[in-house]
Length: 153
Image (cartoon, rainbow, N blue to C red; front, top):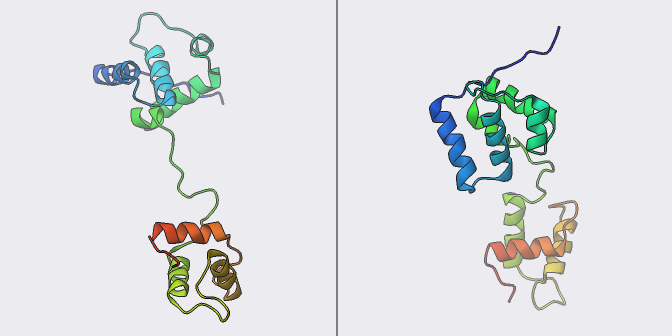
C-alpha cells in the first residue's frame, strides 16, 4: 500500500492569516517557515512546485514539507503551524511543595547545637539526614529560600 497523498486547499481567510504571520515577523522562525511552506503548496495556486523545490527554496528537507502537509490535512492549520507541547517534562522535578514546606519548617526551627543559625549547607545536609530527599544541593535550598523571600538571619 502506497503513501496517502494529501492536498492543501487553503481558504482565503487561512491565506490571509498565513500572510500576516509571514509579514509581521513576530512569530517564531518555525511558524514562519511552516506558513511559507503551506502557502507554497496551496493547490489553488496556478503554478505548483514539487516538494523538493519547495524544500530547496526554504532550505529544509522534502520530508519536512510532507510532514507539514500531512499535519495540516489531518489536524488543521493551528497544529501545522505550532510545535506540539510536551505532556510531561523530560525529567520529573525533585523539589515539590512538600519538600519546600519541610525546608521552611527547618528554617523556622532552632539550629543544631554549636550553631547560631541555619546555613543553606546545613539545611541541605539536614534534609538528606531526615530523608526528605535523596540528595539536594545547597544552591537548590538557596533558590527555595529566595523564591519564598526568606532570610537566614
